[in-house]
Image 1 (spheres, rainbow, N blue to C red):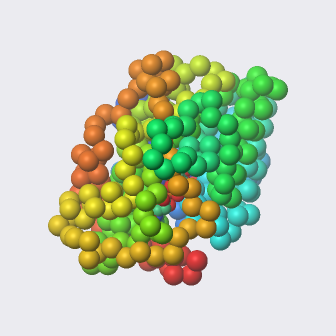
Image 2: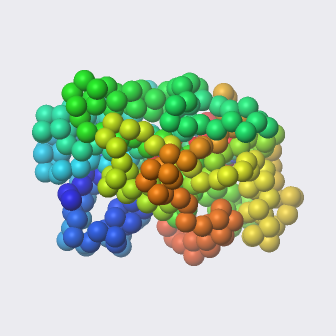
Length: 332
Ligand code: NAD
Ligand code: DAU
């Protein structure tokens, strides 16, 4: 296969490229990434000399570069996005540009060049928020109800992807997954922010009452889910992907990390809540489990410990980005 991976210098994209080239060494990957604040070439430094890999710096909203690259591949795996909810509260416009216009630019090129295979990476946040203390979960039939500029822009991109399937017969699939964690995640996000704060002797910052619930998915399990959908998924279908079978609140996760890092509750600081903060996400991943035989590869606690060890051993990877992410939080 010859793949165009958009957003390959980001968290999930870089993990996906590494996963794919290890598993399918004769496949070829071109990544298109504009290297925003969230794009880090250092996440791909072990791959840059691989003869089956090429990096192109460019924007997914640029039809010229997108057209040229799409013409060279058979499959598009689309990760590139503005991905941080807090940033979407401060500056929604770039989310509309990248997540909606950028996706449409890619879809148009895929259509023009003979309906290329298109896999779109989306989020469980498009489904809105669930009530705390219930067993309700998102699945492929949950109605869309996005509540932040980020999730609204991702919902818009999902609708466009489906429109190109129904209107033009573009061979698409979509995955809507939960919160990823693992190596190479930007220090702006919850788990790496907590770990790196503690490694620097700072407190962790808990929004509001800390009773918010997310479904946590280890990033390489997400990569294997995309692999399953690319190889065996039904064209036109959506698959919801998650990791947990029971709820953990942000505070529960904080307590686990504090324990694993030999700290206690005195390292917690409660801070002002996020506006419009979604209370609870939970994902029913039985469709991808039953139809494509996918499931997470290990327990959450095991992957969390591995992630802490990774951030401890790779401080040079995150030291500079930590300054950028904490500056964002100071000025938001
Ligand atoms: P990220 O923010 O770490 O990386 C995004 C990458 O896209 C960066 O390398 C950035 O430079 C690039 N990019 C941004 N705008 C671009 C543009 N206009 N043109 C070209 N490149 C551009 O994001 P991530 O966490 O790796 O998320 C990847 C995808 O997965 C996104 O579509 C996101 O919505 C989705 N997703 C993420 C999570 C999660 O927990 N991280 C969960 C569900 C879905
Ligand atoms: O659900 C999937 C989504 O998960 C993805 O689509 C997004 O791209 C990804 O960023 C993530 O969104 P969240 O808003 O859930 O992730 P974040 O890491 O920003 O926050 C996770 C939870 O932790 C949320 O309830 C807010 C809270 N939080 C976050 C930070 C950064 C804190 O309490 N303190 C913090 O310092």
